[in-house]
Image 1: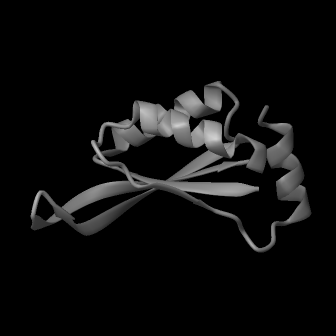
Image 2: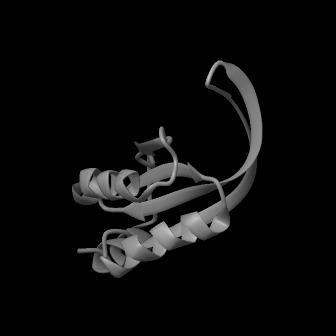
Length: 101
């Protein structure tokens, strides 16, 4: 299992991409969180509200999911990265692998 993290300007963008990935069976699920972000952009510090998303899939789909998020993402330079949980409940992992292609 792998989890892909990205941030979006609003909930609508995040849901739109999450649903597309679900419809294509590239991910088993996604989770959204409203966050406050601070970052450098165009030479100055910016603070903004964003929506963080976690997309869960199997390792074989990692590159394709990351490419699809980048292709659909509204940001010029989106944060898209992945991590692998150290351990995953076996029943959850079975459910995940049964629900993605």
